[in-house]
Length: 563
Image (cartoon, rainbow, N blue to C red; front, side):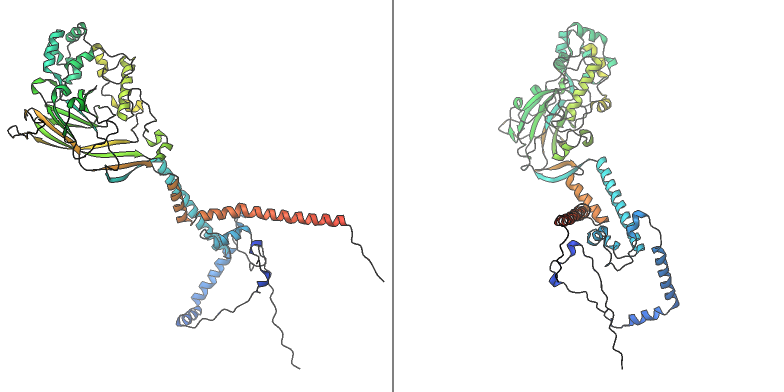
């Protein structure tokens, strides 16, 4: 009798689910099914592959590869790298660790390799991840170092910003004559003070000559006549606003020069005539600016620093003082000058205030208060610091320098001490700590100068601007903006919190593929999930202890036997 066919052994797999992986609807659970591997259609490539497998070289290669892989599997690993050793089970009968679950579900590139891979593959990929981590830290450190070295950066926000959108103040124009001593005043005051005119012409501060040429006899005579230094300077300097300004036009309309221009003093340039627009007002039509008609008065020249006749024009901000380094244009007599201004405005963002002045290299308007000037600028700060240095060294200050009301003015005898301190700007920069302003206006000057022809008839307007014009002794000056737009610059920090997030995310995403989701996953698997598991275990233990207590209180079960 034929024996009955034996049934195939049944394989039973035990699956240990995590709590959050257990199916919620148990009636829909389906048993595991085993599907045979589908056979691929045979092709020429498959035949070639089977042919190569018969070769000794190919079999030797497969054998060596298996041998190397086995040796790598047997390499000893430190205890803290034990998670890199491959699992030698089918993955179903052993509970997965939290690290393995995190690797399976992590969005960071490469972590899924740690599950189901061989030991050498895990070690190789661990080295790659550590290398990527070190490279990302290196690039982040370089980015931070660059931000620390250059904490601020200046951007060109707009190269053609309309002046109508952002009102731009007209610059201050200071006009100083090349003549430092008026010949008429020199003859008049020399008789009054009983000093020879040749001696007064040698005053170093006015003529620019060396101090050794100043006669001590003239100094004694001036001291005996009770002449102060301020009187000497003010009464010998030519009066530009009163005598040398012949006509003024603002925005193409004639104006009263006495109301438009004011007399100013500079300790380096002497008496000047300045045009300063009213605060808060705009430049109006940029193509129509300031037009002036100036008289050189060659017959009144008595002492000059230059071997020329004419004027020096200083273009600066309205609230700043002029000094030896202020931007200037030399306009000789008998010429017509067209000065075209290209404005630049620089403003600071609110992030700049978070940096220390020493790091950003500039002061905001409210951070540095001055005792003489109402508004801060580097020129004003240097002028005040220079005045304080003079007071400390010489015990007095120049008559036309910023000072406090209790500071004494220098006398003629102290002129030698002051002259030694005039051009020592390098020392002032190091001791005064006068940083530039973070917000300022700058005006670039382009000049065109042409010689006036005295024989050419000038247009006779109804306002009489060219009345009695003398081309050989006069200067025509026009100052205006070169366009209807300005260049606007923004001073900002090199890296704020928004750019830092972008830099950090770009570097970590490039090297490791991380994102905010990856951070949240790490927080969940490191903090939230272990905490929830611990609470669950505590709850189970509590229920077990409660069940035991209830059984103990109920006593042993009563067994009733019946016959």
